[in-house]
Length: 145
Image 1 (cartoon, rainbow, N blue to C red):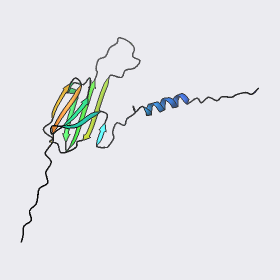
Image 2 (image 1 turned 180 degrees about the horizontal axis):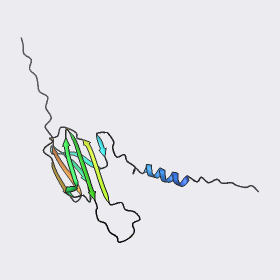
Image 3 (image 1 turned 90 degrees about the vertical axis):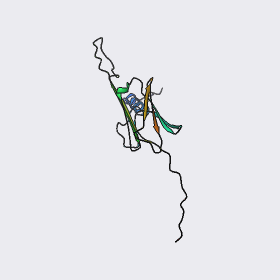
Image 4 (image 1 turned 30 degrees about the vertical axis):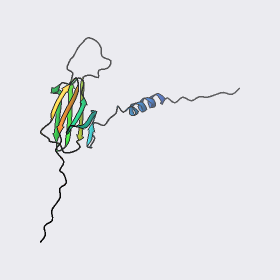
């Protein structure tokens, strides 16, 4: 009768956890240097001559959100801190204490920096930015000398 020997790798469980950690994209770099950076998903589209930006910010108040448009780059920052300390039990996991998201986006087209309309309704931030009219080509007349 033959003996079957099965060797067990003691690091299999740890490898599976690490693979899952990096595959599920919940490890994200905090600071990347690109024109489209951050952790806040947004929709950017054009309607009626205005650039529309929508971002989901559930749980954030308008005082928690900062918006800036400068030289064609839109920056949205939101930070919410829960300061409720309770002694009602023993925490096994506490993940809701500080919540922050941010996003920097290079906007398409030429946008007026000063004329931004922002509205927060049911956790959805909607920005409306008027686009400048694109210069139209014009015919150049040549003089005779």
